[in-house]
Every structure is written in structure tokens, then in C-alpha cells.
Length: 309
Image (tube, rainbow, N blue to C red):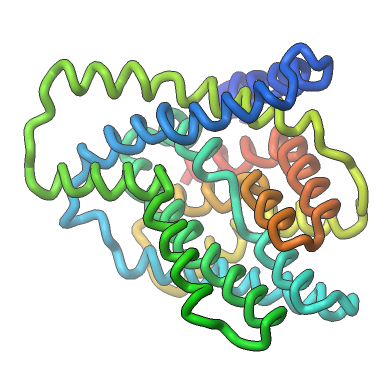
């Protein structure tokens, strides 16, 4: 257990360094925004393309894996929604709380950290989780909020949503990498070295950006935020674990990667959605802060459990 904690500690120390830089204003919010943009559009995209280009496309899609993650995450989504409605929250706020409870920081934290901790075999399952989160559940929250506020979903709403998905650099880089792998194209040495060099900056850059962005978050609406953090760090990996191992019989290693991805803290892009929709902004911000801080202790426990079988 101590060995796993010591392996995960450097990742969280980089996050802490970013938080300290942002808190002291040595790294102002404007710098955090530009660093995030660099990581999102260049470094992380290079890493994802290079990872995807090495995968065996034929064996990547596992229906049992997809169904397990979808069902486990959907069950937690329904629980989060029900709890919010029980607390008499409006429909839009309840949907945002449900989305917060099951959307992890797979892109900026999961891809760099889990591949290092669990090995390169984790690449495929992590990319599958990332894709489901971005395509399925981000679409779901958008449709629910739109329907609740406009009374129905119009075609004019679906087009910007589809355009946002297909223009997402993480989606584009993964699809391009999978196409490269599917066509069995050779990877020229200079291109591989370029992608490796650029992609190597994704891990420290993403972790530092996470920490710097946390520096500006306020710890308000603590009651709902504590519940959402608990749901994300404990109930989400438990739900997908039951679905993967007890219901759908997912291969143990892939199931372990799925559980580890589900154990990640709340993703920063949930806050962007909350701001965009104008709902639950404070509790989402606090949930990101609380879950990221608490994950220093919870993620090593999950990784330890997975690696010990």
C-alpha cells in the first residue's frame, strides 16, 4: 500500500505545485488558461494520437466493457439525480449534480497517470472510458438541460452539440490515431519522436494546470459538494466494479482499469458546463476541489486493490 501511495504521490505533488503557484498569483489565471489550452490542443492530443496509433483496433472495442461502464455510470447518474430531486432541486440542477457525480478527470489526470501506474495495456480501456464520458454523458446533460428550459429538443440544438464533439481535439486525435492503426500505416521515426516529445509535456502540463485551476475555486455549498465528492470517489468505482465483475464478466485487467478511471476526481470541464448552463456553479466548483484533494488518499487505495487482484 505504501509503495502505491509513493508512486501516486509525485502526480499529486505536481498538482500541489500548480495550486501553490496559482494561489500565490505567481501563475495568474490568464497563464492557467493558456497552459490549459496548450495541453488540450497540443500536448495531450499528441499523446492520445501516439497511444491510439499503437492499438489493435480489432480488439479495442469490447461490448461487455462498454455496457459495464455505461450501466454502472448510468446507475450512479440516476442515484445522483434522485438524491438531488429528493432535496427539491430543480430539474436542471439535479441533472448537473448527477453529471458531476460520475464524470471523472480522465483526460487530464487519468490518461497520464493510469498508463504509468497500470502499464501501457491500460491505454485502450482508458481511451474507451474517455470517449464514453465525452460522447454519451456530455450529450445527455446537454439534451436534458435544453429540453428542460425550452420544453423540447430542437434540431438547431443538436447541430452545435455534434459540432462540439467532432471538433474536440481529444476526440479528433483519438480517431485519427485509430484510423492510422487500422490502416496499418508505418510510423516514421521523426514523426514518432515529435509526438513523443510533445506528448511528454502533457503529464506535467496537465497536472500543473489542474492545480493552478483549483487555486481559484471557492469551497462553498459544502454539504452538496461533500456528497458529490463521495459519490465520485467511492460510489462510482463501486458501481462500475459491480457491473464489470459481477454482471458483465469483463476481463479482470480491463475491469481494473475501468474501476481506476471511475475513481478519479470530478473533471474540471464539468465546471465549464455548469457555468455555461448557469446552474450549480458553486457546488460543482467545491466538488472538484474536495474530490481532487481527497483523491490523494482514495486513488492509491483503489490502485492497490486493483494491482493485488
